[in-house]
Length: 285
Image (tube, rainbow, N blue to C red):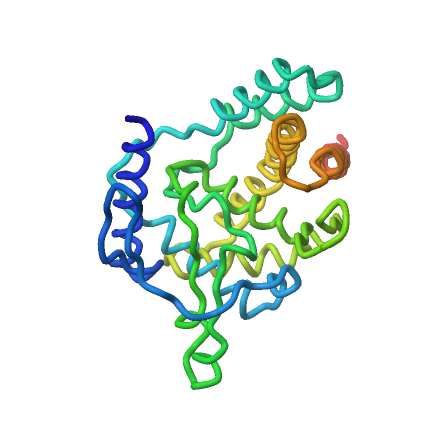
């Protein structure tokens, strides 16, 4: 029954997205699957995510996505999933020593976040973004030629997690045909200017552009980027134990945890700098 409910929910989401022209149109659904509109085009490549026009178009698409009203539960399941991955790792005999403090730290971030709950895609990476170059060559705009696809993880959740997941994917390239079947480069995480450009396009599309809003989302991104790394590292530890897919899950978990520590150090440094700045601004009497 659970699978049937999930299929019904996904079909409802699919129908709404197609109607809003945010995804393929749904022509019919049945017990074995559904009939969808064919959208010509190809998946983006990882390096294309940083092209300004493509990046701002993704932001515009995400802005429309986040404003959808979908008839499903609005309770975020991120913390529950996060805790579930941790417990599953324990059950599978994963050495959890390095995860104890990061798990506690990230759980507190999730519980204390100010990030609003919106309808999230939850998987905005290059493989789930289609671009139709023929449309562009024929004179269509980028917004008319780029679509998000694959909505199986779509649900209500924290806005910051959707942003952070996308930005983290800038650092991951899954086109590597050799072991471990991905390339990772933490330096590809979007710069401050690149994040601001994306966020500004997002807010402008929603008619909510302001410096305060930009700063708020920037803070959400850096918090949930850390959460995302630990979340997917735990997921990868599980896959390393149970999956038959040829992929460097252990290496992936290690890279994601190293990325977490890099961002944590940046955050600690930033906060210490802010404290020092505040102390220097205390008037001397």
